[in-house]
Image (cartoon, rainbow, N blue to C red):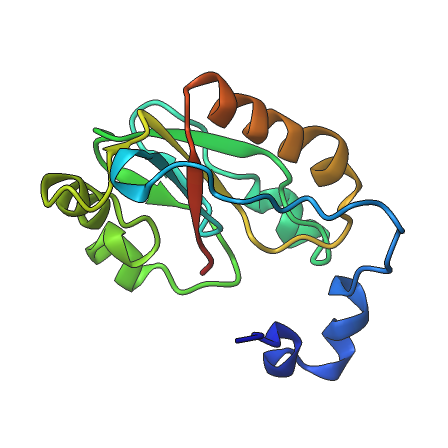
Length: 162
């Protein structure tokens, strides 16, 4: 089944998110490990951060420059305490009431308990999903996230867009 995510975007947004074919090989690869043996990480675009220890995403700059989105990321451990949310384009009430709406840590833990998934990765990742210019994402953010996931032995990631 092919999912056409552009179908749900306003036409004015479409050109900002379409990617021109480069002729390079696809970045996808087969999932070589059985899910029951795999370590899985979660990646959310909700702008979550650990409230007691991490800086929130930069909302002041985004308010001043509405087409800018903070391209940094936050590492959220599996046993993270209270989470905060910094994202101007999403109502945070539901996410703050139940973190599983945007970062399903408890759901993943349940799947591990049921032996459907081998393990929850020790760390997960949160980004701010609203991005205008993807240059920093391509050159810094994404490579840093990939490096983290590889270094901790993550076999796969579940993307939780918000």
